Amino acid sequence: MDRPELGLRQLHAFTVLAEELHFGRAAERLAIAQPPLSQQIRRLEEKVGHPLFTRGPGGAALTAVGHELLPAARQALDGIADGLAAARRIGSGEAGRLRIGFSASLALTVLPGLLRSYRDQYPGVELELREMTTAPQVAALREQVIDVGLLREPPEEPNLATATVLTEELVAVLPAAHPLAERRAVPVAGLAGDQFVLLPREAGPTVHDRVLRLCREAGFEPRLGQRAVEWQTLAALVGAGLGVSIAPAGIRRIRLDGVAYRRLDPTTRTTVAAAWRRDDPGTLVAHFLRLAGVRPQ
Image (cartoon, rainbow, N blue to C red):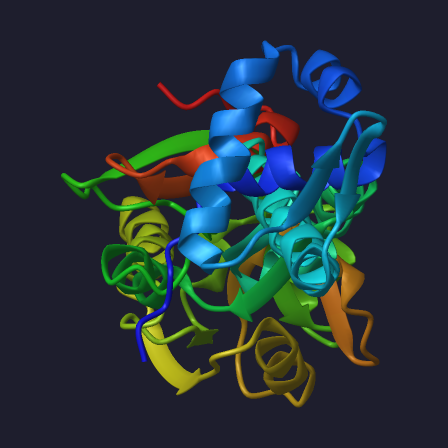
């Protein structure tokens, strides 16, 4: 069955006339002259195949056909209005879905406050959070699985833009019974005789390599032992006496019996950055970056 294509302007004119039941008043509301209004109604009646109004000296009245069409016309116009409003909200960054990747240690530092600020300002945006280390975040950004990432020591990627959100000290993670746990600051060279518990390189190659470089600059090659994908697991393994580690200072919020956190000597810092696709910042991402103190170029 053929379906007539009803113009929105004609439906709008029809609903206004149905409310006013007077061509003059309806034309005034529509800000048009009466002849164009009559033409719109006539064209709509031609598409329907039946009169929608009876005309008389006192004005107009809806026919039975007009009464049947009126609810559908209003529903169609309301649907278009709702769709336009929703599209505008998404375009302005007030609605939609933002997919955020984040390194686990940032849940101990910058992430909670940033999410609260974003939620307060943009309550209509759905947040989808994915805990991921640096390398998987880079891949997820490249494959458009996430929209923005918060990661450590971002690698150079031609299609990704990055900007520093904060810098954070690296600290020594020691068993509480370790001789150096009595010091306020631990020299990296003092860890030469210990086995190291680290995140696997494939999870965060830049942080992993940074720790190895610190050790080599202190004059020794670290002995790698247990591996841990999560910071809490790393701290627990250290507390169990399976080695020492060097980790971002946010790990100090993981309070476990048998674990001591000490500053490094010399002080060394790690970079936390926001990363996003250069060709697709999007309004949602731009708002998130602004709250993180970053302005996309």
